[in-house]
Length: 197
Image 1 (cartoon, rainbow, N blue to C red):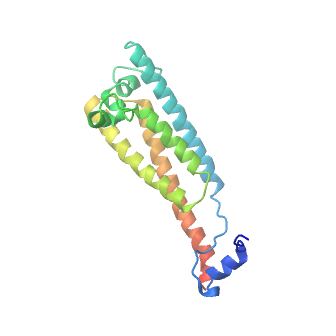
Image 2 (cartoon, helix red, strand yellow; image 1 turned 90 degrees about the vertical axis):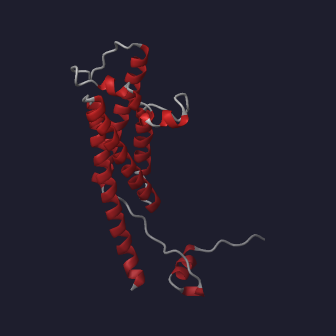
Image 3 (cartoon, helix red, strand yellow; image 1 turned 180 degrees about the vertical axis):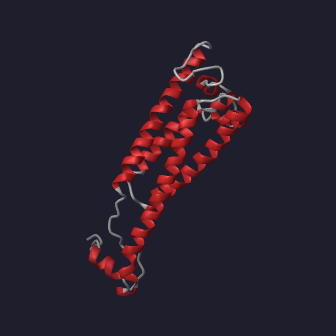
């Protein structure tokens, strides 16, 4: 006969010191506030839509150099100029490292699309690992946003509405993810406190 599975109550008892064995504490399910979920979905949905439009813009600009995007409002306010520039693909870095035709040298909008989808999907779980991944990826996105904002203002000397909005969305997600870490940390502390006493 196969080995019998241990019942949850026995595992919990061992976690509290019974049986002389050490085990990880069993935590109850923790849920994040409703406002956080709603804010995350709204921000991620906006980011996904902007990324899709940027993908469309980059493709159309590649077909027709005279293509005028909806966000091309003047000589200084042109999304297409920034998105179609060398910094609009692979952050202007990946092409130099891996080659312009490398599979990893994708438009920045593709990386943005992956980022916002990841933020939305991982936001559905309240696990510690997911919270850390969300926060880490948010910090990386802020570093990338600051780098691209510098290129936009000082190198290209253009104003890209789509770019600036995505920078703001990334900053909002950073705040949301930080608040999630703080909230979950406090919730887990409250659950562990009775066990430790």
